[in-house]
Image 1: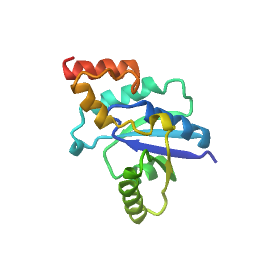
Image 2: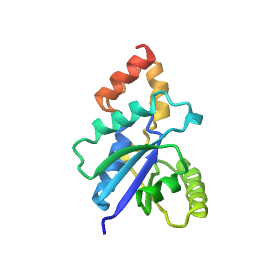
Image 3: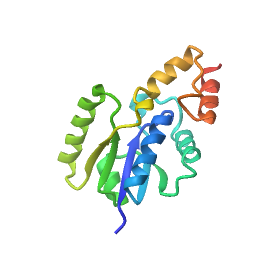
Image 4: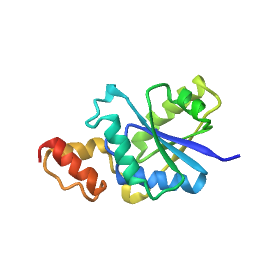
Length: 160
């Protein structure tokens, strides 16, 4: 039986930290479904379709990866896709409390999905899509943090 994991997130936009976690997950699982959450409550800069396309381009060389989107409870989505594992990234200690609370809530909602926390490479441990968008608004060069096509899209969105 193939091992399948989902890596859910907003990915607004995808960063090298996200890509690093996807690559690491591919070393553990036979298939990794990167699932883009609609999540309008977060007020994403990019549409779901744009975020899915960014991820497809960023992961096209990774044969174990499938990109999808969802607008339901993540545990329901995981069950629908036959995934028993959800991958979540922990960058800093500040992420832990939120992620731990979410993992326990998900476990209560559905005990068939386990959450695995993974840390990105230390070179990406401080990268946050929210902070990158703020830096981009102030004219920062984001090419060290996101793929070039994402940096270009950010500049266009921000009118830079």
